[in-house]
Length: 218
Image (cartoon, rainbow, N blue to C red; front, side, top):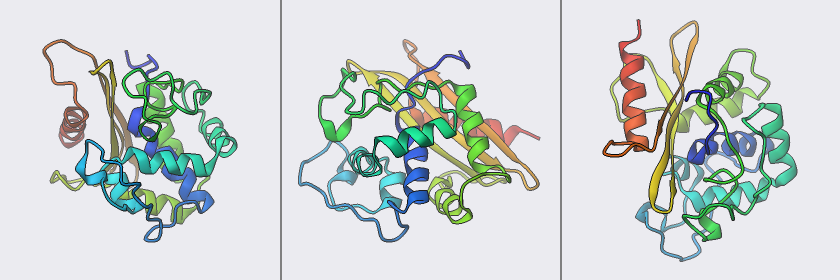
């Protein structure tokens, strides 16, 4: 199961943020996008929203706009450079997603063409956040700021992103991936929960499991 490729869903916001920061499409503190006025199911998205809030509230319409602004070529270059899953961004509009046909809330990373395994997620995190990373220091620091977990008290700083995808209204993929700062080294992780009858397979549960495993790790 750890090697089975599934849709990354909102964990891909780590990658779109990374590329956006690296290319200057996203400027911390100065990248507010204007709300269209369309009312979304998450009330936190129904306003003009800055990058930091958009990441923490996992605002899909904000990152749909960011991905479009970055463009196919640079997204493909980034995905290829990171050896991200199957590299497949062909369904740019997200038309394969049968849970939502609103373009503002769809894309190749949401139950669509792009797939990645839990093992590969952890490997990508290591490429981005290890000491030999090929990304700019300021990019990594800005990304860490929005990824830091603040809703749990932990001995080690933990950084990560949740993700959840549905098919025909049913949750089929839930993630929490990132890393823990262990001083001289980082611990890279990914928790994935698949569709399971009668079980909590939310991204919040995946995050809870990850935090417990890291806390218990010695």
